[in-house]
Length: 477
Image 1 (cartoon, one colour):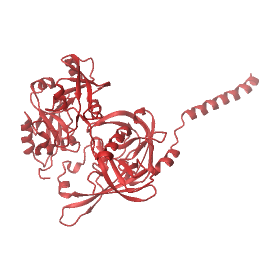
Image 2 (tube, helix red, strand yellow):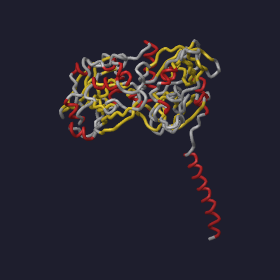
Image 3 (cartoon, one colour):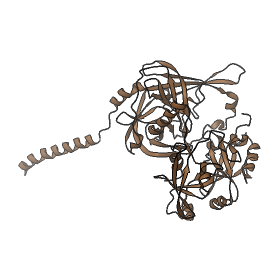
Image 4 (cartoon, helix red, strand yellow):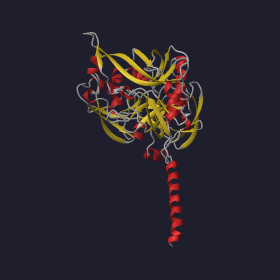
């Protein structure tokens, strides 16, 4: 027996060692050193200087508490130190930092729109420490994409990947300037794809657990092949720093926007002219749906492509051409990527019967021209609130099970309503304890609302009633 053990023991040890080696190899983490060496020259630091009105700052609707703990853009409540302006002028200089990356050899650079929003001066610092003044070619706030131009040639560019090929669990890395520390590298995995955030209906965000902090905003997100698959844009945080949930704009979306900005300085996107809301379980049952897929049309804007095609409140949009509308957040993205003037086929459910409707997609109206005949968005009171609303008809009151209220059609992501947590499709039932019967009632309530305290607003969302606290700026700010 002892003689047998002398042969068996070495074999067992060799087998264990082999298994351990294979296990270690399987657990080996990716090496980003070559990726960083190749890509770092194409990543830039962006610093901006802007002049802000200190009187408006003192009347901020957020008060001393800062931006609420919700999906928010970098620098949302991270106000950098300010340098006083000329005495008596009531203004100060604000400096902020962000990231970006070179997309063409002749000096075009991509970043986030919010990084350069309101900037009077934009300076780009390259990897070789050159500092170049940049001009803003164009910015699209809806997708948070901006394109800059510097006067330089033969700049190192990055390779663009295909964000549609990303898979959950895939390794990714980010290079940027968190808190001003140039060319910092962090890595993680893709946590989810096609995420919809409350204020960004047109972007199917990539969610990752890559460490992203203020200053990373606008920087590239890479796959293991060293290709850019996204632009780091937003974080979810309760502390102002990284908490394991960050969001990037897919590069396929960003490059389409960048090409339009370079060609014309602005973005054209498809528009139907409908107010939509999610399909809850109860609504699905009431409309004869087997599940909660689709987007329920709550209202149709007058003289819009939707109204001309015959779409009605109560229709449930199930697909756009061959693309299924999985939920209400999917419809704006599918329509937004259609070129204005093109025709699409909508599969809808109306009165329990499936139908197909041809719609010639329109061009998204310019800001301030999105209101219906009531001209909600042009009203000063609703500008203070940051919403465009419309009245409820009898059918909508019955479907939503409310006796009064107005439905939120459009939402300014930086307005007071969005800051309070109000979303598109919500029904505002009361404002500061005053029942809201129609649009005129809301206008009057907002005009008379105090600015020295939070205002209770009761809304109905997907059949549930809840209160939010809202703060308004003074009308002259």
